[in-house]
Amino acid sequence: MVYVIGEEGILEELKLAGFTGIGGPEDGRKIAQFKSNSLFEHDKSVGAVVVGLDQYINYYKLQYGTLCIRENPGCLFIATNRDAVGHMTDLQEWPGAVCMVAAICGSTEKEPIVVGKPATFMMDFLLEKFKISTSKMCMVGDRLDTDILFGKNAGCKTLLVFSGVTTPSALQDPSNHIHPDYHTGKLFDIVSLM
Image (cartoon, rainbow, N blue to C red; front, side):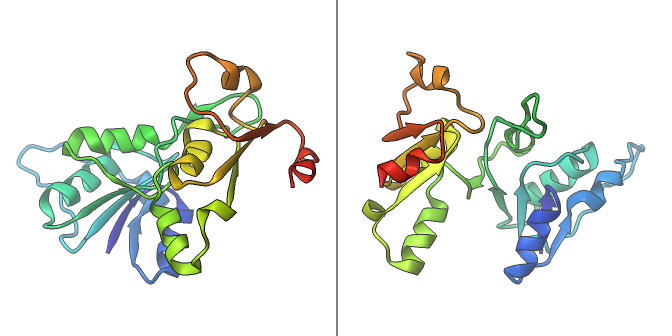
């Protein structure tokens, strides 16, 4: 059993992988009750808490996840990613999954197993399954701190596209220490790189 602090997509992926997920958006409507001499109940069979981006985050979910990690023997704390921000709308950045992950880190005093970029968890899985050398791969993405760093950590060539988070000025900023092998502002440029 897996408790999800996140949205429907995580529950769907867990189901496809053969796991039972609880929580998710449904628990976004629940309210933690602060009553004298009351005990917040949680499922003792939860063996993992998965935390990702959650627009329905609330105190109920934070308490549930915290109790599972702290009180269920061997319960894993898994983060989908630690993106600081995301473009949920065209006009501005919004808080990313790191906000939810940090809340659980703080309440449990534990660090998660991160399965998303820039951690190489996914790449290790792909390499094992498909037996392809990273020297034959190119990681394409629009974020330096996740996509490009993931590619670098995995030993791939990297291509930064200026279609999302990272801007040309952010790439050239002297404080930036993550440099892609290639970068482009136009999709057509990929053809010339091949």
